[in-house]
Image (cartoon, rainbow, N blue to C red; front, side, top):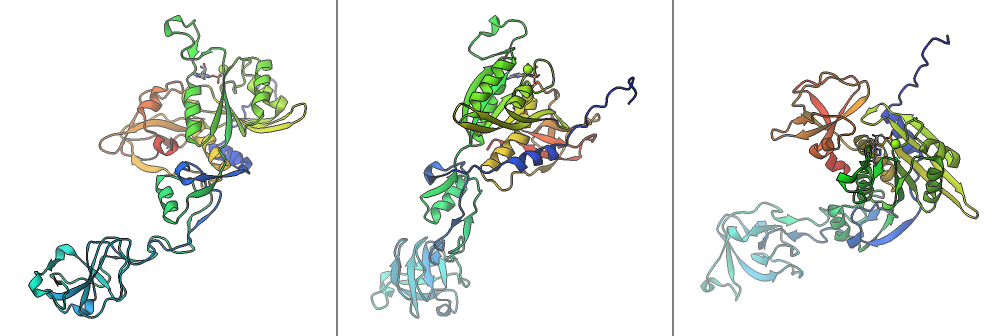
Length: 428
Ligand code: AMP
Ligand code: MG
């Protein structure tokens, strides 16, 4: 290369490529624990949940009314004698010709009955019309075969895998687990994550009052949303605070953080400036890939491994370094770190699904990088754009309720259909 030529910048890596490299390294955590389903919301199943019974266990009534035999009802207005009463929790006996059973919601259908007539479609006749000491009911509306009968096994059949290994439990799935009789489930233990921020400019809120801040100082905002995001992703977090911008301190904290943690997560210091010490420190203690990802906000992202040999014991942890700009850090967490944490906990499908929604704005000057635009759904169901898309403006992710995933160099015109990811999907 001629010396007067400017050196070529390394091409940016695509987000999909970076994510697939990260996910390829993710090993499901080897430890499982048994937890009560009362405490299992948000945990990841380490076993298939297989049903040992039918749900519902028997055919049962979905109405308060009368269990009948269609063959006894030639026309509306037919009368039947009521020979048994079956409340929920009890079972009746076979229904004979000309008989009806008074039945309540959830009670098993007696043998011989093939429909339920809801009580609103019947009339209980007065005592004078009793037959052989039994009350009589008049059926005013003819039922159809199987009407108001919930079939045994229509929800779950015996032997079904109701929730496969890798499922993240939520309120609905906890109910389903209980419906097959599970009180305890085996789950993957929570990932242990050590978190710290780098930057000499950072000050913890509460340490110095706003009016006393020296010039150049800013409050550490990343720590707070990253910790909250980690907790929502099911992690245990060790908060290591702020680490000054120098190599010895960075090395010391990384060494300590590698002990007893699965992941060390940092923000800031992963650019390639002189004040960015994370890269050389991780390289000394293990290995590191520092990627320039074709995404906006975002771009610098570090992924590697720490292997620390301490006097007696060997400690290993994954390492992830997020950019310092708050919005870059927030978005990169969601797109790279969160799927990785899901994979550590055994979730099979980590990709979130986009919604196709119309843009309510023009975006004529797209970026070369794939861009995640902060937007808000409006009352007519289309998307409004936050006016300031700078990577330092946290207001954009507070005002916004999600992002548009906009491909490289793609202009948007009002009315275009775009791919929208709600933050709600990422904050579960
Ligand atoms: P860096 O990645 O360290 O070069 O930081 C990029 C930008 O993000 C700088 O303007 C930093 O001041 C800012 N920044 C870094 N860390 C944080 C943090 N924890 N909270 C708020 N801003 C930060
Ligand atoms: Mg910095």
